[in-house]
Image (cartoon, rainbow, N blue to C red; front, side):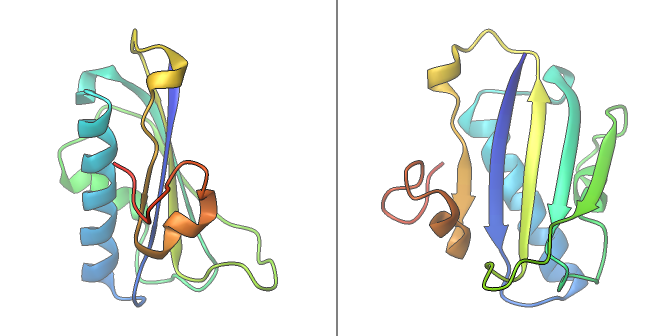
Length: 123
């Protein structure tokens, strides 16, 4: 089992924008690691306190992922933290060696892990 991380910074707190952004992030995480829905064990989503328009997990349910446990939580409200960020931690059954796991950081969220997202985005 491996954990795959991802994050996206949204431009605004709007339901459609949030769901579309989370779908894009999730699909990029899956594609980058050669995963399919049956590989997933569980997925945890967090959102910064300034995001209120919907639960990030709704986006993944809309992609047809209906038999995997999903959980949403709120990020800590830390002064100076990057605003409007959704993070994903997906647990998957995969034979990929740990060093080959591709973590995905989109948009401004690339600043969260410059070591993993050199050049602004990593897929």
